[in-house]
Amino acid sequence: MADELTPKPEDKFAFGLWTIGHIGRDPFGDATRPPIDPVDFIRGLAEIGAWGVSFHDDDLMTFGASQSQRRAELDRFKKGLDETGIVCSMATTNLFWHPMFKDGAFTSNDRSVRRMAIQKTMRSLDVAAELGAPTYVFWGGREGVESAASKEPRDALDRFKEALDFLCGYVKDKGYSMRFAIEPKPNEPRGDTFLPTIGHAMSFIQTLEYSEMVGLNPEVAHETMAGLSFYQGVAQALWQGKLFHIDLNDQKIGRYDQDLRFGSEGIKDDFFLVRLLESSGYDGPKHFDARPYRNEKGEGIWDFARGCIRTYLALAAKAREFDQDPRVAEAMAKASVPELAVATVGPYSTETATALMAEVFDPDQLADRSYGNEALDQLVIDRILGI
Ligand code: GLT
Ligand code: MN
Ligand code: MN
Image (cartoon, rainbow, N blue to C red; front, side):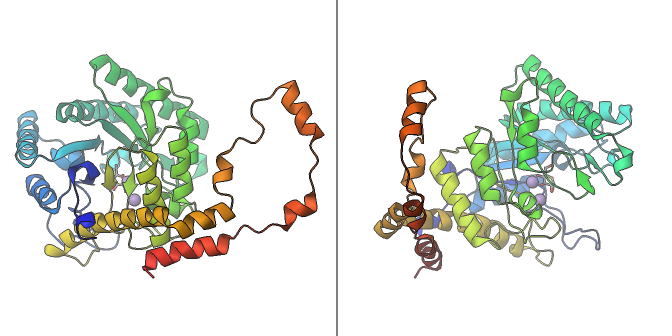
């Protein structure tokens, strides 16, 4: 097991500058630890065996500072990346912190705020391209409402689409090889957020001008907040070829966005999630968007980071053992799991329809069988518990 728990570059573990480096400020209390310098941050990542880093424009370069100061901050970071070999795996725009975004960014009722938000994103896309980020995330933090009277949602969706179409156009025009990933969230900081779940976001993407350029960055905590199964959502995103990136963390159901250490809460859900990612051919970053407990400091925040990686790798090893266990294969056969992969009727033709119409079924016999799901699920629990 020891070697299986050692991260390798091909595992593509990544963290955002705002995650391990979170200073512990929350709506009820001030910072509990100092910020980490971005270059020290990536040195720390290299030490724990991570591969990539992500950032918001404002995490890296001081908002509102002079061009020359921002350039110096960026160059210093680039030097740090070169020194450590850490890769820039994703970038995004901070469209939620500054008070100008209090009514939204791409969907603010104020047209000048909307234009400013698109301009800020274009500038940040230039930086992302310079650092070689393959994926650019759109989390609509402030895109929403408290009062339903305050925005016409269909207009807001028009404006969201307009912004993404325009920004896709910008990326194409500049010749950047970058894809966009929308990150859904049901609420917080707004009372209701536009594009609240994986399902809403996936159907919205179909309406975009360059829909092939746009996919998803789903987050464990966000779907769990909505009471949905993250596993099922991710599976559908994979099925539709839309899992461009993923935010791994953990969350208790029905709470505020907790961004807990990966694997620290829903261990069974996380087992299935890791099994899915590892078997699906997903080759994007395993990006942890989580933060240390607010009462951690110093080495404790790196314990948190190492824990995210360790639990992911341990669950991947458990998933492999599970899939190689002959008792599991036997239980799956009993549950007819492989049979679901067999086409039911095939494509329609007059002949296949006639053949189906002629078939005789015995409802009592069909109802009489057992699927053995209790025994199958117990094998999952046994494997996770190591018994
Ligand atoms: C913010 C949010 C995350 C998003 C980040 C990207 S920032 O911390 O809670 O879920 O992924 O903007
Ligand atoms: Mn979150
Ligand atoms: Mn996230």
